[in-house]
Image (tube, rainbow, N blue to C red; front, side, top):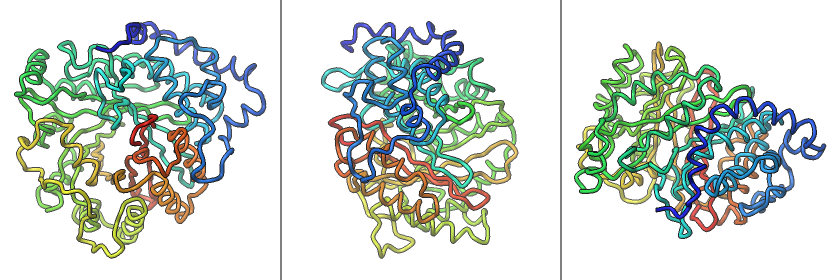
Length: 504
C-alpha cells in the first residue's frame, strides 16, 4: 500500500471542487493580471523565456526548484493556491512547471496560460493518483509513460496559419484503481469528465458512454479473479482522457479499447466492429475494412484502441489506432494511400518528404531499400488475423508498439475516405534526445517552419531538468504526421514527463 496516509483529500477533490473552478478561474486570472504580474513576468508569459540559445544547455529550473525559480504562470498559481495534500503536491511540482513552460514557449496569451495552469491544478492533478513510494514503485503503475507517470504531453507544431498547440493525455487514477471496485480503472476518468459538464463548452459524452457499455463486462469481481489466478490478463487501465488546449477553448477526447472477461492480449478488430456499426453506416469504414482484408500490409496492422471526441456525435471523429512491426517506406506508402485508393498528383513527393523526417529521427541506414524495414530488435511477426493467445499481458506487447509504426484512421461521420495519421517511434535505446531533436528541427526548418524550433528545444531542456539532452533517451516518444488535404504536414511531438534518475 502507498505510504501516503493523507491521500484522502487528493481523491476527494473531484467532489469538493465541482463548483469551485468555473467561478474561480476567471477571478484568479483577473486578480493575478491586475496586481501580481510585473512587466518582466508579463513579457515572459507572452513570449516565452529566451535565456538559452545553446541547443544543449540546461534549462533555468529543475524539478526540485521552489516556485519562485520556475515558469511564471506556475509560480503565480503556486503562490496563491494552498497545498491539497502530499500526492497533489508531488504531481503539481513535477508537471506544473513542465506544462507552464510549454504554454510559454508555444506563445499562449497571458490569461490563457494562467487559466490552463489553474485548470491543471484543480481538475487534472487530483486525478494523477497517489505519489510513488520512496523506492519509486507505484500502487498502480501507469502504462502511459515508461516511468509510470500517468501523463503524456504533445506539442502540435505550428503551421503557416497557427502557432503551436499543447495537449496532454492522462490515465486518471485513484485509490480504488485495480481493486474489485474498479479493476479496469475507469471510474476516475469518468469522474474527471463528469466534473467538466457545464464548464467545457459543448462537452458531450454520448459516444464515450456508448463504447463503455459495449466494450466491457459487468462482473468486476471476475476480472479481479482472472488476474489473480492467472487465467486472464493482469489488470490495466482501459480508458484515457486527452485535453486539447486550444487558444479559445479546452476540448477533450476519450481513448478506449475492448477488454472482455477471458480475453488474452489486445482485442482483434472483430471485437470493435459491432459497437462501431451501431453508430450507423460509414463509407470510410467500409473502405478501411476493404483495405485491411486485401492488402498484405493491412494484414500486419493490429488495432489497440479507439478514440472519440467528446462533442455532439455528428461533429465527432472516431479514430481507430493500429500498430505494425513493418517500418519500410513501401509499407508506409501502402498504408498511407490505402493501397492506392487515396491518390493525388503529389502524394509520392509528399511521402518522400515525410520519409526524410523518418530518416532524421530514426536510425535509418543511408542505403536502406524502399521495401526493407529499419533494422532493430528482433520481434515476433504477427498479423491482424493472428490469434490473441500470443500474449496474456498488454504490457508484454509494448515492444511491438514502440519499435514498429503506428497509424490511426479517422472514420468521421459522412467521410468518404478515412484521414490517416502516421506515428514514428523514437528508439530510445539507439537515439538520444538531442540527436532526435536536432534532426526534427532541421527538417522543420527545411519546410520553412523553424519559427518555434528554439522554443521546442527549451521545452525539452525543461523536461530534462539538470541533465543535458544528449544524456536523455525517451523524452520524445513519437513524432506523428498527417498529410492534410491542402498538402500541408500536420506534425506533433509526443513527450514524456522527465523524471530525475530515469532513462528518459
